[in-house]
Amino acid sequence: MTAEATQPPAFQPDSGPPAPVTAPREKTAIPKNPGRRELGMKATLLFPNKEIVEQYYVPLIYTACRTCYSELTPDDIFDRAATGQIDQAKMQKLISGVIESGHGSTIEHVVFTFGISGVSRTLSHQLVRHRAGVAFDQQSQRYVTFKGASTMLPASIEDAEPELRDAYNEQIAGSMDLYGQLVGAGIPGEDARFVFPNATRTNLVMTTNLRALIHMSGLRLCTMAQWEIRRLFQLIRHEIFQVSPFLGSFLAPKCVALGYCDEMGNRDEHCPIRPHKDNVLGAWAEKSKAAKAAGRELTVK
Ligand SMILES: Cc1cc2nc3c(=O)[nH]c(=O)nc-3n(C[C@H](O)[C@H](O)[C@H](O)COP(=O)(O)OP(=O)(O)OC[C@H]3O[C@@H](n4cnc5c(N)ncnc54)[C@H](O)[C@@H]3O)c2cc1C
Image (cartoon, rainbow, N blue to C red):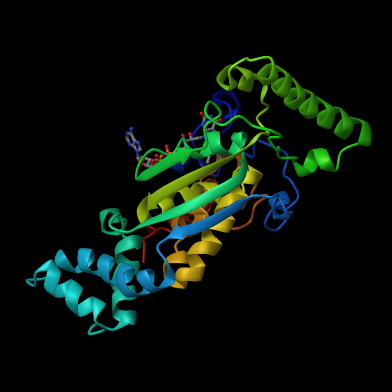
């Protein structure tokens, strides 16, 4: 997020397109993702497996959607859906429409549990900020005494000048060494861990319903997200695609569903996945002005 003070004034529809606030950056196509390197992290879908997803998940969501508009009872609808009496394409069409309309409770009925390992504490702190529709359990630094805790090396530091990279590595090794000395001297692990850097790796179990997963993916697959958590959600999306390409297709940067980018940091559109909303509104204002000048009102088709 950008500090409040650096924000330009809000765009007023009648005042024409907003003036550019930052020097335009080069359009880079989709920004390079350093997280594509082998980072030693894993995300594994623990539950459900493909058979369960195929047999029950789409029928379950369909049942939730259909119940709203049907005289049939939920168990009748589910029975028909889960025994192949309703066409898959028909179920998917209804579900897609309902998701696009934002009727999100229908997709809270299915959950996914992931085993996440080897991610840094920097990542886990961001991940556990998600509160709605998601549960976490994380490896304890109190109850686990680490004998060689491993750490994450960011690509920018790996590629930095050798002296800088060595200084980083020494600092990390020094912290880990001191941790060992403290534990060896009888200091409890819960206190010795205070020397751990943010780079320390950790493991979590995360269970999330589909609505929360789509929301989190929208934020974390965005190119404005931090590289490590973006990489994690790429792995998560891959896992969902393995069990259901249909459900996996809803995991995308938030701009894909919105149709525009709403990130302040992308006003210069250096990330070109979708146009920035300021430019969309700006184009609309220009069109509206031209229409007024021609003596007609602009109508939405
Ligand atoms: C690119 C990026 C940069 C970030 N930078 C910072 C930063 O600098 N500092 C910082 O502190 N955080 C930062 N965050 C974290 C961010 O502010 C959120 O805390 C985090 O993304 C969790 O998302 P969420 O609030 O949508 O919560 P979720 O728990 O995922 O909630 C999902 C949705 O449920 C609704 N909801 C949940 N709880 C409530 C509630 N109590 N009341 C009303 N509605 C609710 C909201 O609509 C919410 O969007 C950043 C996140 C991103 C993606």
